[in-house]
Image (cartoon, rainbow, N blue to C red; front, side):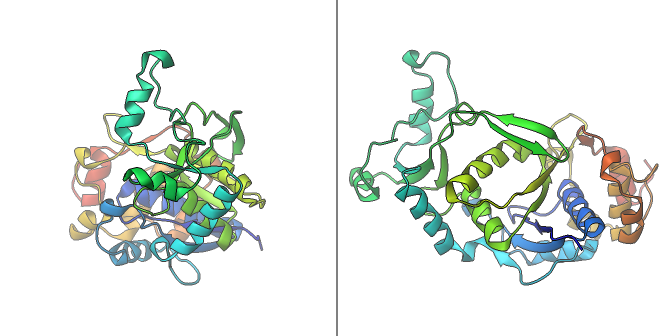
Length: 316
């Protein structure tokens, strides 16, 4: 039995769609094939973007046949752990308070003396304040940033291959606590993964740059346990852009209302992954027997009219 631990980590910023489902199912398949434990964590820190509770999302994961162990963890209930991590970063002077607004950063990035415009944070507040209380004296909200490394972050991804990410130019010093006093995504996932012993992470390749930030944070916080990563190509629309509302309704709840079965969703995911030669219904056991991650395309997967028609039970 493997000692691998992975997690399903949906965010209730919207209903699950076909692209989300594909990533979660692949994560589940890899876990079953390799004997990993699976945990469930709800990443509900994204403030105004959170839409309702997570019960419908959890129901949809169960409907697909995904399973996990132990209680559901919710990031919104773990604020004290994130604050402790921030205090450690501050005590070692890797983190600092920042009062810059987005507008401030845009103006600094376009200033003539900085040469070519860049989206990277220029470090305006690094070393500027003795502590958070001093930063608040001007009446502006305070966020916390972590100093980005000067050298590129190098890591090997089990699916995407060797990676080199220059965080100093890709955003620069990054936010770990937002100015609403909530932990930012980068810090929260690092703390949660370490606390749960997660050492196998499967997610979309839009998070490769975030992965470099998280590896940097893990090192600063002394989280030395090795992690293996699989960053998968996204599901996109026919226009080549990330699957979204502009491509029509691709939510699981929409297809469920049309009478779509879990077997139809799983069969389409199997076809998208190269496990099946055509779109057909399949259960999780069928998919597990046929699935081989080495047969998956390294390119984004297009969700088109034929896929929509198959899920909706219409002729293409």
